[in-house]
Length: 265
Image (tube, rainbow, N blue to C red; front, top):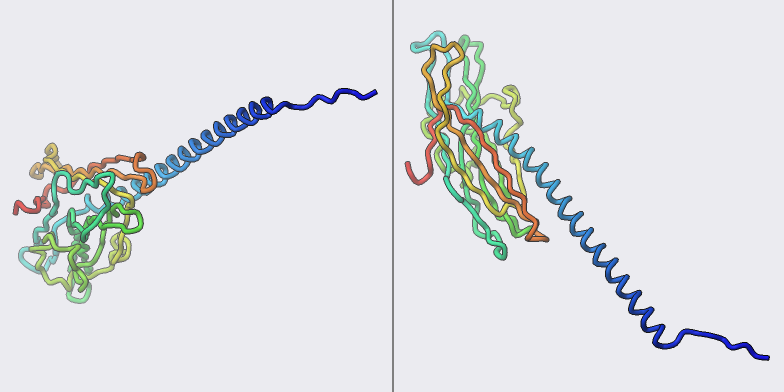
């Protein structure tokens, strides 16, 4: 006697295959979604940490922007000062549309000098000061199609002060520069020349305003008003244009340093 053997009908196979394909498609969609979220989150985390490091350095340098000072007890007057300037653009400096790429040449956004005083104790015992120029510049990045925000750092005697140092922050710093060719490391600064970079930038906005009065530590010095300087940046994931990160920072500029908007000199 032969037993009946039961198998799957064509209809059952088609239904099973459809269910399997739908299940596989759902799994793949979840995988792609999770992968995009991971990549997006990873990019945001990396750029946020880079921005924090970049702006920590920028804050340190901006808040050290200063005038050129020479201290010589044997001369009259004993303290001689030449004024430096903090040159900057203002408002929305760049704003790259989603479907456009960064192009053109470098765009200088700000320029300022960090000066440390020269103390001449005697003809044979001189403490040499420093003048270090800083340039905040956006540079087209051909790899990502966006911009890089660079902080260029060079000593004033550098012969390669090209288009990234053209705003005139060092105008007026005309004391004998031989007194200001010391080692930046001895003043707690990194060796020069140097460059600090923030990548994937698509928008930069600069603004400044007068802050509240601050008196001297003794209360007897003339009250001064520092300048509050603000830099806002927007970064965009070059592979996922919908993923953006916006960050803003405010710094305090010494009120003795003259802040000038480029184009309004």
